Length: 408
Image (cartoon, rainbow, N blue to C red):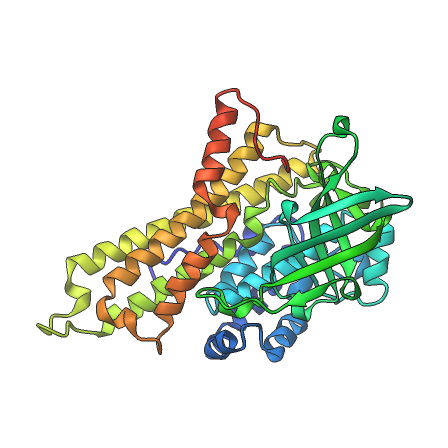
């Protein structure tokens, strides 16, 4: 339909390997009908149903940006946006867990090979959860590694995972050492899961808490955030693709931004289909003849189109930069964070607009609209999409002040 927010086929914009790229995105789109049918059950379970996880595995979606040397597809980074966009048109909870867990294969490709082998030599399909809330943990340097303690919230999909990437501050007795941020890769035997996920949005993501007590983590199973700011990483020795030289936390919003995009696209598609065939309850006027209906569709679709263009363009350009060995400066890094937040905010605005335009229909729990509204605002609540935070830091750097985001 005109103005539905779609762009040219993903294969035309994705760089090398476009045939396999198009096939992967097509597999994600093919899952939409069955995932929509399961959406209510997914919410009831508060985690992805086993058959949904199996569908994602069978389609190869968890491994889209895993290194080819271990059987991954090693697609361009924009694949996260495009596949989450497709899955989000079925169920935002599914798209959220897909994007989170797929991105951790990408990040593991930047760790020391010892860490990669510890996971992938046992099972290349193994899922890895995460919580990147640095203040939630405290690590202490010891001979051969670190001792880690902490309690992390929001570890999405953790019940399905054999491993977890947990972020922590490394403490030191010497103030001169400053603050170090580091990621730790733990087997599930080293943490406990607390079942805390009772939420109003993204209900099916199983984003529970994890707790670690005095776990020893070998040096090779960790990576400093300073090694993930762009350019060669410890994993580049075995994974030379520019994909594994991207600035991780500068691009962090785009791991999940496609979820909000797909959810908004589904909301728009559903609204248009409803408006085409319904009449007003009160005066029987056709909704499609009402100017207000037409304007709402135009405004929502413009927001979604703009969001998709921003997300995809930034991801594609980041790959171009990485391939030529260019590391973005702090101004560009804060712009990437600004754009990531702004584009998801546009998607949330589109859903809110359509929710309000739907009147009493939006109140029924039997319909998808109420879930799309709740999920849109749940996505938007992630810190990566907080425009006040991203916008403030962008403005600081634009004015010549230092960045306050220590991960960039």
